[in-house]
Amino acid sequence: MRLVQVFVPRGQLEVVLETADEAGVDYAVSEAASHGEFEALVSIPVPPDAVEPLLAAFRTAGLPESSYTVVTAAEAIISERTPEIDDGTGTRISREELEARARELAPAASTYFILLVVSTIIATAGLLLDSAATIIGAMVVAPLMGPALAASVGVVVDDDELAARGVVLQVAGLAATVATAAFLGWLLRGTVLLPPGFDITAVPQVRERITPNVIALFLALGSGVAGVVSLVRNVGSVLVGVAIAVALVPPAATVGLGIAWWHPTVVVTAGTLVLVNLLSINLTALLLLWGVGYRPERTERIDRVYDRLRSRVVVLLVAIAVLSLVLGGVTYGTYQTAAIEHEVRTELESMSDDPAFEAFRFQEVGVDYELIDVYRDDPPSVTVLVERPAGEAESADFADRVRERLEEATGTDLEVTVELVDTQRSG
Image 1 (tube, helix red, strand yellow):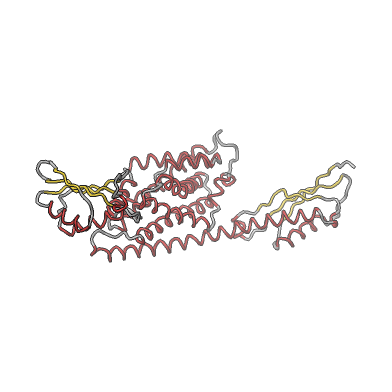
Image 2 (cartoon, rainbow, N blue to C red):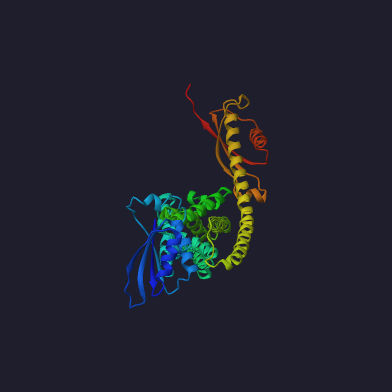
């Protein structure tokens, strides 16, 4: 429920009461004293989705802009008339509430960047330490939900200032995240806080962000849906903010680490993930806000806003489609590397049980086949550890036979290194 309170300028009380009667809502009138400017305060309890039509009716009736209209959330309604007042059909807040909440979600620049830098420092430390718990903890601090939703709200309700502020905060925020992570990585690189020869691509939490696949697109779209639903229905905003931050801050911090270690592949792949997530969240927010019925206050601007909305949606779709080609390429490359490793492992297990290799036992030591190798058409490099009983001699073409078996199983040329180890077995 919402409580709409109208500070009625002198001479306008009859207009307000007639409008409320025509809307069929209950109201209470009390005298107001404010330097003689207002003659009464009219309080009206209404369902959330009735706020916008009521305010529109007041404007149509000629209620001057010098009046104040305050909309507050009612914690509880204690009345036998509650079923009549609120039939449970309210599914969204009013346009005015939406815009007010969007402004609150885009905080002052100083607050925004302080929280973002702190979140980035925590997230970067979590990435370097391979600590998922630390990364999730950092997300509670990140304020990225607000600007993402504020920009879309501004477009839909025709508030250019809000839309521009949302876009600027998003772009500047991600730039600040990347710069902070890069600076922190530069400070830590080569210090005693990280082991010698530390490779960021070998850290599982980092690797997760540099091998994004098409499924990441669904995460971003889901974050956008969750953000809009939480905003228009006023539920779970903190948890949804965490979900959206998860989609943006860690990969952006990964881009910064890629810059600090000067690893172009990390920058490109993680950067693609950041942009896909950011654009998808904005696209989903625009479409859902328009789809649930939010429009500009002035009806004559609806066509203009629709044209702007359509052009933005087209640009976002094209950008996402282009970036998705990179995601598709990463998905294919990741699948190829995983398939080679699986087929090598399976074939070695089969060879261990094959009488043709007698008492030899095969173990995979490692498969060196990175994503970039797939597209450079470099052959996978496989190292095989072979256990043999002491005194057992292998044939001259033993390594070639192992390589041929593995190439037949994988369907590709391989560089195979065979390492023989003598084992003593008790009889």
